[in-house]
Image 1 (cartoon, rainbow, N blue to C red):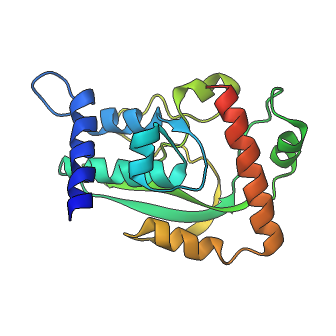
Image 2 (image 1 turned 90 degrees about the horizontal axis):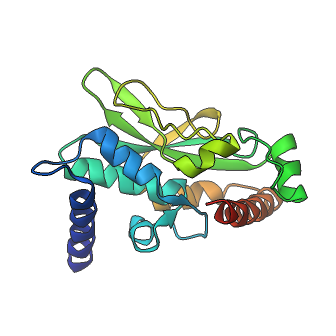
Image 3 (image 1 turned 180 degrees about the horizontal axis):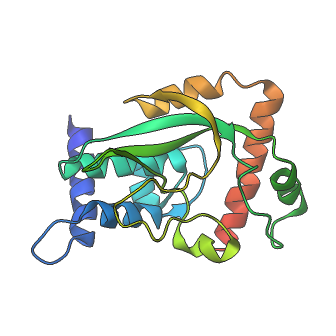
Length: 201
């Protein structure tokens, strides 16, 4: 209970920082504030770590986005999909050669997260993976989203795996289904990607 209270306090502080004078932030403002947190995949998927370090992977950032939206009274969940994380990325000259090879060929089996928000008309898919600084490199940053329509996903999913409350536990279970080679390729790819992104943010 105490840990949740501390987390709730951090959520409220985040919302207060981005709120307009005398009001509360709307859904697009919350989405873009989370989206512009640095991307990094270092193994810690908790939203608390995202807030503390101002960086996070698709899991931590989207759990945080879900919880912030719920904090202001919106209905939101995290959906997990399966796909090739490398195949949807642009190849950039400053990438290391091993990273560029994976981007060219694909083959990084992964499970990606985004938020499903119940909008005024229908559910919308909100992908806050890439911050604005990645736009000049060709990444789909979703900078123009203003509250209508789905955002562009960071990967092309094979299909929806699940919509679940305990995202960290479920993602761990899904990752455990990867073969040893798939898991090692994923680990190496995300390490190279995180290092490269850090150099460009």
